Amino acid sequence: MNIIKHSLAVLGMIAAPVFAAGQVSISIDAGKPGPVINKNVYGQFAEHLGTGVYEGMWVGPKSNIPNTRGWRNDVVGALKELHVPLVRWPGGCFADTYHWRDGIGPQDTRPSNVHGSNVEAINAVGTHEFFDLIDMLGADAYINGNVGTGSVQEMSDWVEYMTSDGGSPLARLRAQNGREKPFKVAYFGIGNELWGCGGNMKPDYYANLYSNYEHFLRAPEKARPKMIASGGSGFDTAWTQALSKELKGRTIGITVHQYTVPTGNWDVKGKDLGFKEGEWISTLANTMKMDQLVKDHVAVLDKNDPEKKIGLMIDEWGTWYDEEGRSALFQQNSLRDALVAALNFHIFHQHAERVPLTTIAQMVNVLQAMILTDKEKMVLTPTYYAFQMYVPFQDAKSLPLAIKDNTSYTLGAVTIPGVSASAARAKDGKVYLSLVNTDPSKAVDVAVDVAGTKVKGAAGKVLTSAAMDAHNTFQNPQAIKPAAFSAGAAGGKLSIKVPAKAVMVVALEE
Image 1 (cartoon, helix red, strand yellow):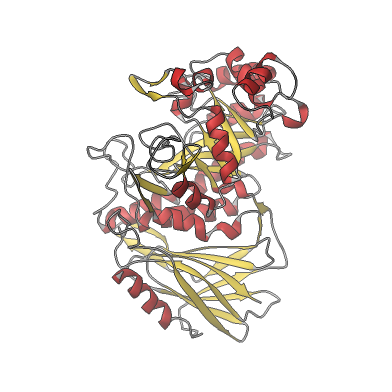
Image 2 (cartoon, rainbow, N blue to C red; image 1 turned 120 degrees about the horizontal axis):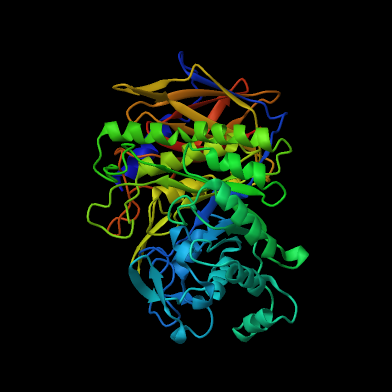
């Protein structure tokens, strides 16, 4: 509660339009809209790891925790507030060993999950249950098929089972299992991380496999999913190079996975809480490398696909910290994670023409989650609030934005920009501006000018706190959350004092 009061006190001091010397200047050209920021940039990823699905989201229809058809009402309700546009399922590496027939039919007769050497809970969540969740959220489905341990026939059957509207045996089986109408599969990924857990393959070999699988994934023409090829990891563009040359006309996107590790060392990644400022700046610096990564892959796409028919799908991204004795990739989520999310949003906006889809890892209880649960308890994370604040950017038209006289934030040998920003005209007609101040100690004055328009003011929300690792717990679930913000203008220009270590989204009053 003290954190919230402190934030509100800061906000009360910054409402008056004061133009200070040495301030950062931002200019927005609202008359030259750029590419649309696809709403699917704000997609989510749900994988069968730990309590990411079971308990975290699914408790079963007989649970004492309030639920609808087995899905937790509190979690679903919270996710709906994010206007989740897309959910990727069932993996991830889990998809590489998932056999869809294990997740249909009466639940008490389904076999157990087998993931690696672990035999886990029965397949209570399968195709039908997943689409129940999709329907509740009003989202699109992004299904990942099993290339690693599956077969062309198995994947072909699954696509037919989900999409067929005729009297085929698989359509009849779907009806027998309670769903006569076909499911809507917006996207279908042919495999996952084929360079690693998906099969330890080479890109040329997978390109041939992909063509074979894609050829037999038959669906009614109007219901055919958009096919996505599984690409490489990080800055390695070899997979993007091979797939964009070989799969023209067969795929609408090639994936790349990029996680943010504070230390850059996968053996000792860094802490989720209690970290020092060195890991604050290294985390932000490492996540900002996403911009160069996208540029590298887009350069390959531009060469091999000048018609821009293939998108770069970043369907695994987010922070990854040391588990420290905890299992199943559970980690806490702090203000630092909210800044990581916002900085990545700005990068995706900047590359909206080539990045039409991303899914953060993951929705609940795993890695950079929106929500944490413990039995009947639920808590929203700072990352959740970042996604909530950025909802207006879904399907908004990006606007050219220039930053002049930007500040720098330096610690030791590391220097990063002090301010990151993005602007767009949303579907409600308003211009939205988002701002990040990366400096954990110093507020920054920002002057905003919109070409051809005199801004009257701005209103929105800001997320900040006194502590770098401020986070919500089950004992104190509202320790950090967004506070209301408003600012005035003078002479048609807006003046904003952005608090230290803050994420801000405001609508401009024109």
